[in-house]
Image 1 (cartoon, one colour):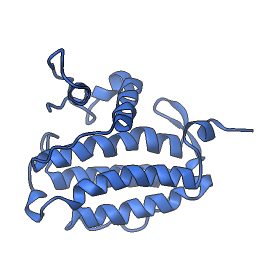
Image 2 (cartoon, rainbow, N blue to C red; image 1 turned 90 degrees about the vertical axis):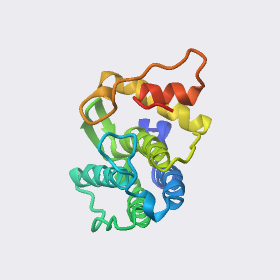
Image 3 (cartoon, rainbow, N blue to C red; image 1 turned 60 degrees about the vertical axis):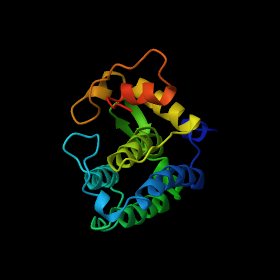
Image 4 (cartoon, rainbow, N blue to C red; image 1 turned 180 degrees about the horizontal axis):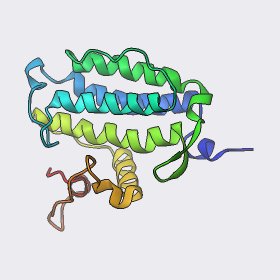
Amino acid sequence: MTTTTDNAHGSGTDLGARYRSLADGFATVLDAIPTDGWSADSPCDGWTARDVVAHVIDTQRSFFDGHGIELGQRPDLDDPAAAWHIHSTAVATRLDDPAVGDLAFDGHFGPTTIGETLLRFYGFDMVAHRWDVANAVGHDLRFTDDELTLMETAAAGFGPALYGDGVCKPGVEVAPDADRQTRLLATLGRSA
C-alpha cells in the first residue's frame, strides 16, 4: 500500500535528498556572504542577516525537538554559514531514516507527517529566507520556476495564517505587469 507521504514526497533517502536540495540552496547564499555582511539589516523587521539564519536553524530545531528527535548541540552562530552546514547535515541525516519522515502528528492544518511539514513549511522558510539574506547584502537572487511553484503553493495553502504573528507582513502592491517573483515576494510582504 502506498502512503500519502510516499505519493507527495517520498520517504527515507528521497526525503533526505529533497531536504538537502533546499538546504544546499540556502547554503549557497550563506557561503557568499562576506564576514561584515552578517550584521546587515534584512527585509525581516528588526533582524540582521545573522538573525535570519538563527531563526531558520532555531525553528527547525524546535520542530524536531517537539517531536522527540535529537539534533545534537546547537551550532555556534559566530559563523552562520558554518552553523548552517552543521545543522542541515544533522537534519538530513535524521531524514535518511524513513521512520522519522513518516512520523505522523496532528499539525496546525490537520493530520500530517514530519516529512510533509518539513518540506512544505520549513522548505518554504528556507527558500523565502534565502532571498532575505541575499537581499540584506545587496545580492540579486532569482528563484527557479520549481522554487516559485513551491512558494506559491505553500503560500496559498497557508491561507490567512500566512499573515499571522511572526510569519509574513501583509502583502504589498505591485504593478500589474510585475514578474512572477516580484508578485510572489509582494504576497509575502516583501518589495523586490
